[in-house]
Length: 284
Image (cartoon, rainbow, N blue to C red; front, side, top):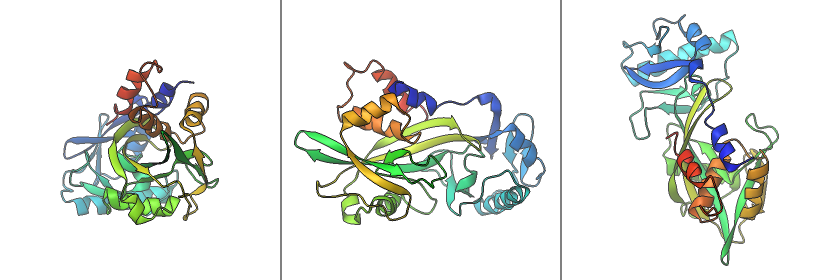
């Protein structure tokens, strides 16, 4: 296994499995063909052709779109074979910073192949000239990737919070990081990928933050999502990345980016260095 394998895994999908999903003639996502046929049963909300699924143009206001799509999703859930509602709204946008075209439950984001956003925090301790990373292990009851290794803090981006607000919330819940400490987190960029998921396409953007924490700080989970934390040498983390799939599917991208930015991966020593740099942002 190579580091590049992780990036290729996060960009694996077959475009032939999908047709575009459009709002106001803007392609915003992609829908699997079998779901498109189900959506054809709701002609007042979706216009379905062999070439695309379009939200009805008569739904002009974001609030009207949200209400209409929510009603369809409720019906699909009652019919079965559809993800359960999570009770957390996401913005539907073409790119970060756009005004939302509607809000949709987090569970349906990949069903429509819509871009989702999240925050990931690298927590590290500096010890002289070296550093160590705090790595989390996901709880055994997690629906997504149970028991896999994770960043110290990570979470999806809900509609009604800013990125920094969400980072503070997630850091408190997942790792017990005090607000005063997490306010020192530095935004260091964004990563993107697009992959096939359980319910549809996942074009995701992750906003990445670095936080140097004191040596006497130990993360402590408060919401049950994390079972334990490990303070790890970067070499040991790299060894795991090169030889296992122990990490949640998108976490290797965040770690590879961290190692590149901190000079722990070198173009002299890593033959895939340029491909890694390109691949980390190919899905933005």
